[in-house]
Image 1: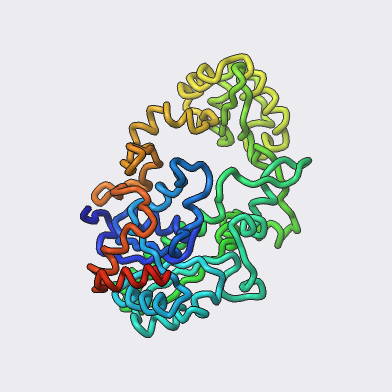
Image 2 (image 1 turned 90 degrees about the horizontal axis):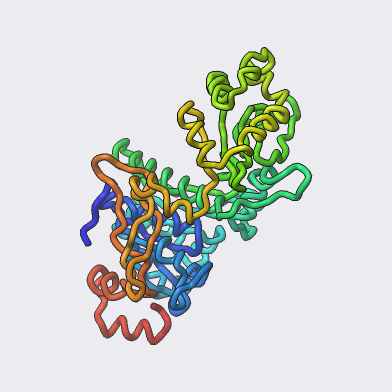
Length: 399
């Protein structure tokens, strides 16, 4: 299928496995870049066997590797080194998420490849970055979340820290990887710049989200702690139980929004209370206000609560699980759940494309491919290997 989207013509080579690097590759592919994913022969990316499997293949694989061409190659071999260098000759971006020093050991690090292609952009994702005392340590997204601060802040104050239900550290690092690579291409092509490598550390990607954490500690030696579903110093903003056992999230921390909430609840007494006119007063009385709101929500179903809040223009929403998303009219209107044909499975539903471009939208052209499915196309048509050479390399475990 012909490439389309704002990154049409951008050539990306994806080295590495599992989450951070491959998620970055997925984002490039969603918006039209030509992404060639390199996997070890026979075993492939471990993600092929993660989470729930259908007919032996992970459903996550079909999502994470959509819009990519998939080849196999033993990067540790001399032939693998030579092939990567051929693939690097006209490439724009290489994504890798090995432990620092691994590609250098195989003679395909940034300094090796820039001799072949000085314009190359290499995005290097690792646990701790390419330098510093921790750089040689193995690092997963979960460890980056721990060091970066989000684990410490997640959960309730009287319970141990918890993780989010997804690999948020890997995903945030991947988004930084894509953003920075596009910046580097712009600098190279529009500002007369050169190729370069980009150092994305998982813990730093999470650390960058930590709002005023650093400045508050610097000035007040204040350490932010776990606070459950509340926002310390900002009120009211919480989740509240309804009488059908469901929770509604309400954000009424703006002064005028809080006034509208009191009207929705029929609690003009709260609106008239001088202590609640501004956020600093409400924050001091957070527990009391949350109790009053819960008294109101627990008397109604979640649909009744949401209907009233919508009338009064109060930011609110149900706490969705995936089944709720499938039924939601807004998800449908925004094409956030799409059907994609998968060989042997029929149509598979997967997340849609974000963000949405008015002129050059991204698209899902195909799902994750079988192991080595693009070998013939890439090795014969792009690199010029003969069918006999491919057969011989396969026998020797090179591809």
